[in-house]
Amino acid sequence: MAVYTNVRNKFQLSTKIENKYKIISEKVLQLISYFDSFDYPITFDEIVSLLNFEKNRIWIALNDLSYQQIISHKYNYYFIPGKEWTIGERNNSMNLFLQNLHKIIKSGWILSHLPFVRGLLLTGSASKEIMEKNDDFDFLVIAEPNHIWLCRLIIEMFRKLISKNFKFKNYRYFDCNYIISQKNLTIKDQNEFTAIEIFFAKPIFSYSNYKMFIEQNKWIKKFFKLPKRNKSIPLVKHRIQLVQSITEKLIKIFLTFFYRNNRLEKYLYLCYYNKSLKRNNVSCLDDYKKHKSLTQIKNSNNTQPFMLQLFRHYKKNESRNKLKTKLIRKLLVQQGNNSIIDFNEI
Figure 1 (tube, rainbow, N blue to C red):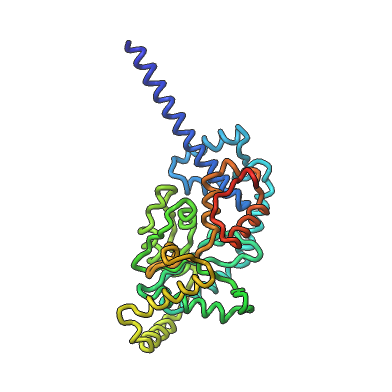
Figure 2: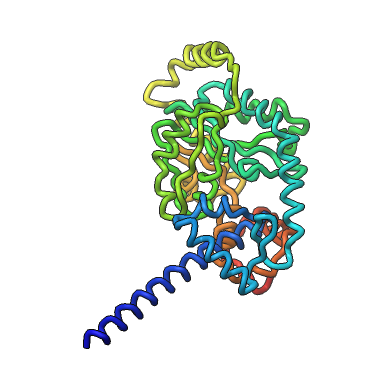
């Protein structure tokens, strides 16, 4: 009887270990497939830094997937079989990022001087240190409480001022996808896509606000590890604080009456709502509130739902290439289509 019990316990332990490695393998494959959507072969160190598993177990899972020819491996990069060329693509994108690094620093330096801007995080592809020829720089802006809509208005006016094409809003160099208040740094969209963006986000201005931002977004631990950033990351230096202080003081003096009971913010909030309604970007106020409030502004588009589907349905998109991904994304954004995609038809 004792022998039978020992055998049974060993079998149960073996089953648990097997299930554990299966879960790890699934997560590893999911991550590699997701980044493959961008022709981005991921390194072993990046996988380890993201996933909440021990380093040696991830290594075993990668070797097992490679042995089964589910993934391929070369020069410390992991990718979907047949896409070895993405290594060269990533290296080219990294070189382009380095070439544009001075523009990123310059854009961040300028933005940090605009009124009510209290912090800047670099997001998007540039946060992963890759860029394509026509990519802009995506920033998450942390603004002074009760000033996020005024901050957005000022940023938009500045972007129009430096734009070469006013009619089509062909703004140069930077884009602000998120503007959030210092009092509410927790991102509402708590999913895998947003978690990856937060993980890779790089502080450009105000490391203290970046630490507060990460502290209030620890929900990403449901999906990935918390990012580790050192204090040498912020790139904005030699700011002229006096410029921002004087500008803010003049604005507050000029708009004293509108500051009572937060009137200005509420007015701008409704103005942007009416503007979105006229352009058919939203159908009603409840739809508008999903992306915008008095403490958070998210530029609504269909990229996030699309990328979430890529992440969650990774087993169905192995044959999809970069061109198709870009075309479908563009089509979804143009049509305003949030419907579920059948990847078997892609």
